Image 1: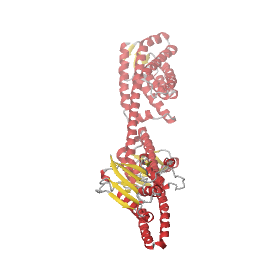
Image 2: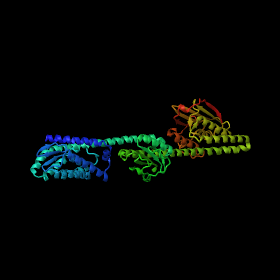
Image 3: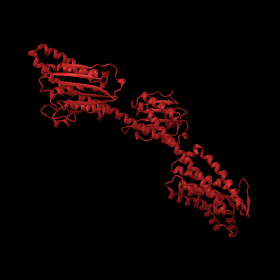
Length: 593
C-alpha cells in the first residue's frame, strides 16, 4: 500500500508540474479567467476532461495484487485494474464551472476509463460523471469564493475516490476480488486525489491572485495616464490634444498603436499605421460606429473590423469617451494578435475610458464655470458705470450755463475716466497703481460737487504699487463714503486708504470720519442690496461679490463703525508674494477733493 501511494504521488507530481507550467502560458490563463458562457463552458469541459484523461495515464496498473510501474498504460485486460488520479480533473472542473462542467468533464473522463476497460472500467465510467455532478453541486455552497480554498478542497477531494470505491464494490464481480482491490488501492487513491486537488486549487488561486494584482497595477497605471492626460483634455478634443494623448497612451500602454477620434473623424494616430492614416480621415469601421452609437466598449478580433487597414494590426479595443453623458469620441487600442487582448487589457481600457470621460466632463464644467463667473463679473462691473455716469452727467448739465469751462473740463475727465474704466474691467485683476490712477480720475470729476470739503489720503507699504486687486474695487467704496458717510460735513471730511502687506496677504482698508452706517444696515450692507431712502448699496454689494467670487469667503468685505465716528471697510487678498511686486512705492497723501 505504501509503495502504491508513493508511486501515485510521483506520477501525480509530474502531472501537477506540467499543470503549473501550463498556468504560466497566457492563452491558458486567459481561458481560466474568462466568465462562464456557453462557449467557455465547452472550453472548460474539454480542458478538465483532458486533465482527467492525463490523470488516467498517470495511474498504476494492478494485476493480481501486484503493482506494475510501466511508463505508459495500454488498454487493460479483464483481470487488470487501475489506481489513478483521473477524478482530480473532474472534481476541479465541477468546483470551478458547476454541475454542467463537472458532468461534461466526467463524461469525457469516464468514457476514457470505460474504453481502457479492465476490472474497474465500468465502475470508472459511472463514477466520473457522478463525481462531477456532486462536485458541481458542492460548488454552489461556495459561490462567494472564486476558487475554493485548499483546506476545503482537500476534504471534498476525499469523497471522489470513496464514491468510486463504493461503485467498484457494487458493480464489479467477483466481489471477493473487488474487496481485495479496494483494500489495496482505496487509501492511496484517497490520499493522492485529495492532496492533488488541494495543490491544484492552490495553483489556481495563485493564478487568479496574480491576475488581481495585475488588474490593480493596471488600474494604478490608468490613474497615472489619466493624470498625465488632464492638461491636454482641458483643451478639449482637438487635433493637437488628441495627438498628445495618443502618444502618451502608446508610451504608457505599450500597444501596437493608439488612435483618438471624435464622433466623425480620426483626430490622431500613433504607432503602426501612422504613415498610412491621415488625421481628419472619416471613421469607416462599423464597430467604431457601433461604439459611438451605443456608448459601449467594443472589441475587434479580425483584420476587417479595424481602421486603419494595416496588415500588422489584427485586433483592437474600442473605448468610447464621454463628455457630459454624451459620447464625444473614441480611444482605439490596437494589437498585433487577438490573443494579446487579455481581461487585464479590457479592464484597463474600460477604466481608462471612464477616467478620461470624467476628466473631459470636469474640464468642460470648469471651463463653463469660468465663463459663467467671467460673465457674472462683467455684469457686476457694468452695473457700477451707469450709477456713476448719471450723477456726473447731472453735474455737467448744471455747470453748462454757470461755468462752461468747468463743464468742458469735467466732460474731458469723464471721457478719460470711461476709457480707463473700459480698459480696466477687461482684466480680472489690476495693479494697485492702476486702481489709484482710476480713483484719482474719479475724484477729479466729483470735486466740482464737493470743492475743498474732502481730503483723501493714500498710505501704501513700500513696493506694493503693483500688488494685484480686482478692478474698480476702491472707487465704489470711496463713493459710498462720500455720498453717505460725509454727506453732512461741510468741511474737514477725510477719507483714508491704507494698503499693507502682512504674511503674504494684502490688507486693504478704507475709512472716513463721517456719520457712520446705521446699525440696522451693517449686517445687510455688502451681503445684499439694501433698500433705503439713501440708496440701495449696489456698489458695495458688487465689490463684495467680486471679492468672494475671485478669492473666496476669506476675502469678503468687513464693515464696521469707528469708535470716534465714521465707518471702515476692510478686506484681505491672499497670496501676495514678492514676485508680484516690482516698484518701490512711496506714501501718497493729501489728495484734495
